[in-house]
Length: 223
Image 1: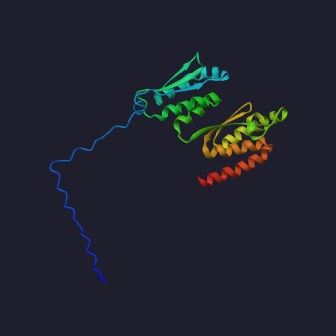
Image 2: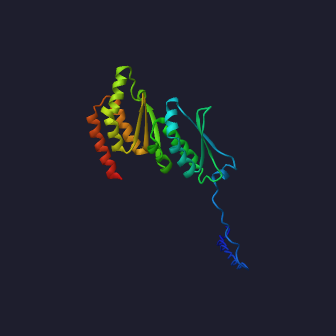
Image 3: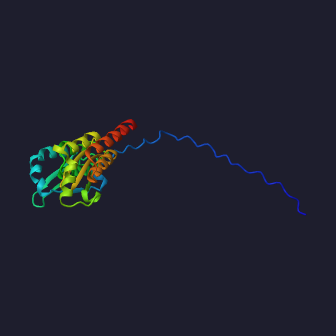
């Protein structure tokens, strides 16, 4: 029989202490943040937004209100291409943030959908705002007088129902024929959309108001 030997003790090597660096350490490099045009290797980035025929006159009237914040505050070049009927946007060498281009494109697009400049300009100032669009036929297939009545229920007498939903949910709603556009935060858009869908499906306005009050009260408690 072989005699069992005790295992050899583990050898532990102690690393020698690092020698002190002679002289001062080199200064920590400081790099300035990249500008928008430097992120894309100096290439200029473009966005184009189509102008529908019915928004051509309102665009002419509100051009300076759109141009001023885009050019002066967001540092994005903007022009109207009359031949192509498109609003063209591009970055400049002094554009502070690359996301400004997309914000401006969303702002112009919101105006084309029918939102007022005062409402659409919030897209430039706040990050968590979105525009959601859907059609009445996405909720329920309606034709003829049934469709007309559904649109009437959404607006209410003198726009009363629409304004009530807007004020309760802190959103802005545009009803353009059978298309509906909602501008607001993700949570608020969901509440407004649910109310509008209930009206399309035939719920009376009073029932929608009471449900809306419950939901907005719950949201106010949560936040």
